Image 1 (cartoon, rainbow, N blue to C red):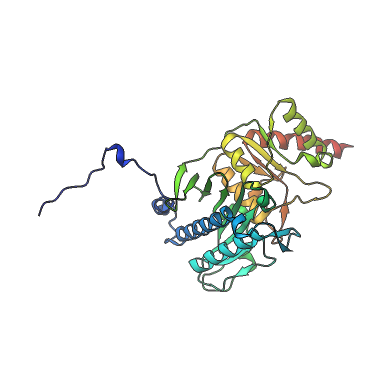
Image 2: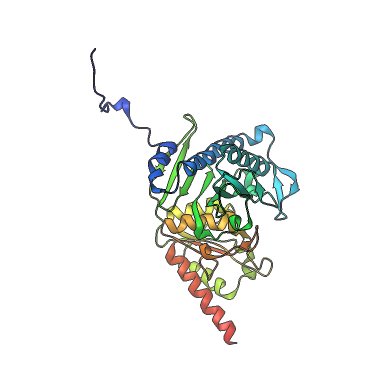
Length: 346
């Protein structure tokens, strides 16, 4: 019997297609001494659901799943048909995967108890961020946070399993459905981005060890509400204009955050008299992106305090959000603090 030992081909026909998400996750399993494959499987379940939602998003017009569904969610926002589709797909994937005991979703008023007491993880998720942009074909996304339950495995879930601060996340990520579909995630050991190759049905590593620029030239905020901003924020926006920074605001949190993460910038959704607690949700929007931001060398605050240190008091709690390049977030916080101090002095 003849034997030939394998060696990689150096032929131009044998170009590498890259590292798949599955292989990357498996390679990184050793970073979790407490895990025995459950977290890896959970990330694969999320990736599978993302592929399905990507397909539904791409054929939305043909499948008559654009437009409003006719209901409002717990936030009082009109649900889009794709909101409902995405919520179903992610909930189903997380249920069938068997690693999750409970889900917190933007689309559900209450915690979803999967009645899987052996599940070690809790997932908080915004199944389809930016859904108001669906009908006009603008980038949208999915945001997710993963926590280890704190009560003993085998027992029913309790409030302390759900109401955890962001600094207890074991993983977080987002999926961007745009000109290309990307999955970006962290497990506390850096941030990596994967681009979906539809012809192969796989996510491939395209953005290894992502790092946010320390400073940037982009500021992202809805300036239509400028008159409602507190004095310190108005001063910061004027500062940005005087520096001739570029105003870029899509209105999809994932898309705005992703651009600023790559190019350098700050995203701001402040508190206003109309929304005194801000508008973005802490558990399944701000926490996830704050974890990613910090792992990429960026920063996230509510204008004063670190987002990841905020202890949640309600399921759909809202928060202001200042997130992005560290120098820009620090500059905004400094100007907020200065003007707030002036108000106190008066």
